[in-house]
Image (cartoon, rainbow, N blue to C red):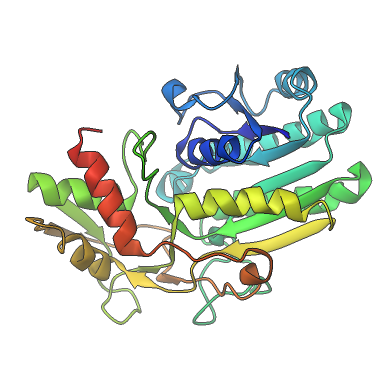
Length: 319
């Protein structure tokens, strides 16, 4: 299939594009490079454009005869969203509306939306099922929930088959090192933690008094390659169903202190932890109930220590 990957020059989008090509598809990347890298677009054609530009999307959909869309393009920093909520709603929600309007005009009928566990807000149960109340604690999560609502409301009118994948914390990189996690500035926990361990610099640990067993935030860490495969599988699932709403997570929680301990198992790695207050909008615990996921995505998830080893090897190699 010819598959449009919005945000395909970013971290998750580029890894998914590599997996799409490996599976025999043609990934067509649509990205404005605000949080992506032109050099990551190496697995198919590149259409430069902003997700809010309906005309550019329409030209890309029709020009490349797109059969399905994987929609990653979004601003995705929780803390930033608390300072710039208007920007997040404009980009994420307005961008999704522009995409849906372009898909309607082009006759593209399959959409996999990259949603988030941030739509749930604070967990009311030890693990979160898909029917857990959605009460986001930050504008980023709210913007993703609003996108879900727009998609589910308009899909019947557009004749759209859609999947909404609410994934948890993404870690790791391509084990071949061809692409890797890269943000400027880097805000994700694992690359910052590994670089701090290697350089002797400080690792800022945000929140030591959460209502969790060791006081640090607990998250469900899913490997980016596993996540990419789930998106590809979701497209296949939509050939036999009209909608799919599912978590993507391992079902196991890891605290930040436990993640520090895992990194310190690497030879010579010692982490200089600098404790900081809890960041606004950060829930204490987010762990998936992945029972439903495993009914349609039969998969053995990569463990956290494997992601640590792969990323450490990539960083040592100078990436």
